[in-house]
Length: 358
Length: 179
Figure 1 (cartoon, one colour):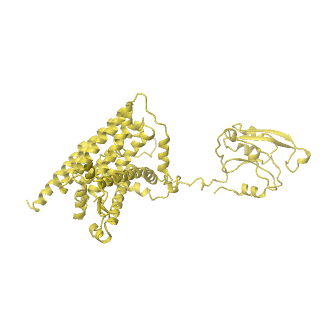
Figure 2: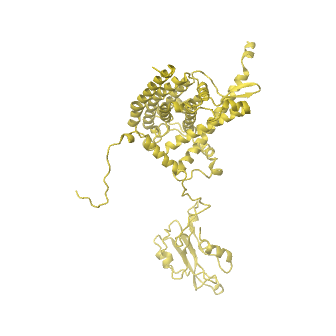
Figure 3: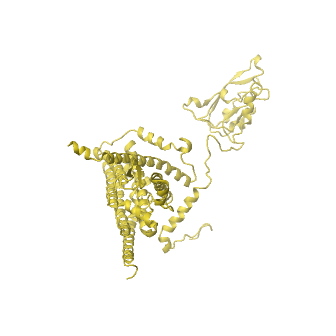
């Protein structure tokens, strides 16, 4: 009994716990500053200045927003389903954060002779895990809409849920084409493949990347696919009845989902933590592993920031989709396109295996 | 049916070309426009550090004038109160006592003079009606306040500083064209 306690690798446990804490706090911090970045980017694109009074350049604005949300009154409607009402935002935030468990944030740090892998769970079914968790994200939306006991919220939640499940299919299909090329589901292996072959998969699979990008927009309920929170149609949709921290959780869950989607996109198609135009292995020999690992994490963050900027750029450019246009696009356009992509990729992969002759 | 003007333009209702149906090129063009806007000059003014310039005839807060020797010009004739379309001005007259010749110009002066800034519509009719050049509208606008009482401006808040006894404040009040 006591021997089994000694047999557990305590250092690994502590290492993973610390890593989880760090990644969750970083996700929340990034989500907080995404709200600030959204307002600034929106303002600059609309010829105005955005928040510039709270702290120098408005840096402390997210703190002010957070304090405001904390201090509001927590209202639970009388006829709502209490358990589900409180559970909804929790599920949304849970699924948004769980996805970040398999993303490789950097190669590995060498601490005290131990190689600390900067990825919480290096499962060899990484992509499948991500899809499973993202599918559970539908629950957050549906529970919120149902538990509010409000016709408009329910309508919005139904629209949101159908949107999410429609675009999940196209996302999965576009990934299959990528899997044919990489031959593995593990995210770390995909990044290492991109490092070794030297070209990022976006150049090998441009159509697949485009489809994945569009589906990522739909999964995050993000413009132009934000008809579940269409302010002028459905009065804030499924998070209308929420106030204070529950609303904060819903809004944050959307931003964390954006952050993690950007991380996944960067990992799958743009080389993840690989520093572009630089031979990472040679740099690690030259400078030591730890500085290079930190630089790699920084490069992943830079890619994520570029994607987040892209998310916001698209939001403030394109008008919203109508529901039938959205469904038509998801089922009639993206799925056939993804299938065609898969066929062409399969054909080319087989051809390559056969040394380019029939 | 004949068109009323010749400015009407025929709306082009051609079906979308194949290139347009893709939507992606149009989206890319829109995104380049939005991106370009990020680098344009913003028309925002950093109020209250900077203010937008007003023209010299801007009708702002009222000022009760004095003459060069520092005597109040207002004689409480009541023409401004009659001219005011919003009935914002009220006053009470008083007779000038023998020792007060340096304070008031004529024998009658306004002991109490009140303008209710909440009623005032800043039209400037009082300025046009005054025969003594005693009231005019300056370039400040009414600052905010927490109570309605705070908006009823009495004589102390309306009078311009005395050029004889308070020369710097007078110079500041006169020379301050808000830039």
